[in-house]
Image (cartoon, rainbow, N blue to C red):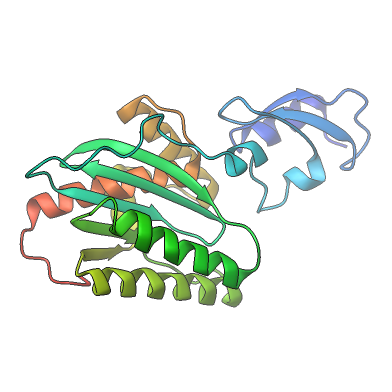
Amino acid sequence: MLSKTQRQEEIAARGYTLIDDSGYKNLESPITIKCPHGHLIKTTRKRFRRETFECPKCNNDIVVNPKAVPPKAAGATRVVAFDQATEHFGLSVFDNNKLVYYSLYTFKGTLDSRLVAITRRIRDIVIKEWRPDYICFEDIQYEKNIRTFKILAELIGIITELCKEAEIRYEIVMPNVWRRYANTAGKDRRTEKMLSVAKVKELYNIDVGDDVAEAILIGRYAVRRIGATTSLAFGY
């Protein structure tokens, strides 16, 4: 059995803090930990060790700027960026180089119902109401799960077709490209998420979950990208 110090180090390695594990006996024993954003979580070391473990408070809260998306000023270039998935969908909006909105959308239900809801949200709200000039979103990479890869590929297809239909310039950016610009590349996905959250805190002094943080950093990359390039074709 790991010592108290070893248990603390194991949890700290993922950016969490061990608050209480009094009465600890084994992996199934209840423990209380704190996430990087200060949320208290009751769990077990067995659940915490799973690769998919994430703070349920960060993932289920809708993180949103208190102000609604402001009208686009005359002459401003509006950039919308996505860190897209079918359940947790990070989003940011920049006017020129100013971050004006950020949010985490959560979608529930069957896969088909989530895809329909995402399509409507992008078409009816993001495109029709916010009137972006440029949309940037992350490309996908195969990571051992073919079903997840196929679902994310379908989601990219939906976003791409919506951009084409509305004649909005867009870019599908590889993760290593925007991470290099943001300086948030890490040894593994967990580390990269933590670096993204920390980078957004450093740049904008706001506390957000990793989905929103990465959407903000993708948007920041896109602002720099279109500032340096004025002749991007559809689907660059």
